[in-house]
Amino acid sequence: MSNAILTSSQYQNYRHIDLVVIHCSATRCTRSYTVDDCRRDHRNQGFADIGYHYYITRDGVVHAGRPLYTEGAHAQGYNRYSIGICYEGGLDIRGRPADTRTPQQKDTLHRLLQRLKEDYPQARVVGHRDLPGVRKACPCFEVNGDICI
Image (cartoon, rainbow, N blue to C red):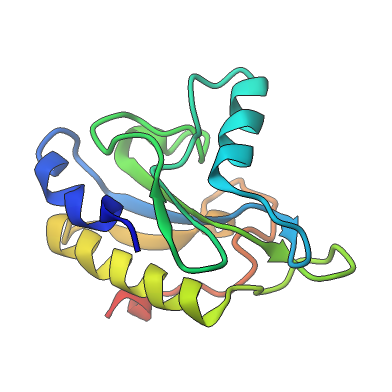
């Protein structure tokens, strides 16, 4: 795991955070989609950089995206007060929404959320699909407040 998890506390006072939003990259479990691929695609869509603050690849490595003191571009209408985490995957071999997280990704997400909850105890952890007005399956698993405990 990279140092991305270890750096969160240095930014905790720059922005008020109400939400931690979990996303998937919406890519098939058989297809590699690296943090560089995601960054490139987001820039090609007109974003300044990758829209997420953290990106977790299948091997469980967490990669830093946007700095935490910077507003993300991952959940329209909620970016100002949220942190975005994306995991590589979310679609099965046929391209249908599925929880494709590897054991390594699950462990990394759990530890990252524990750290973020230390720094932002008031923040609720939600899936992208749990936000009002969102009509997506993302993150393709049931997120609940207990995921980080």
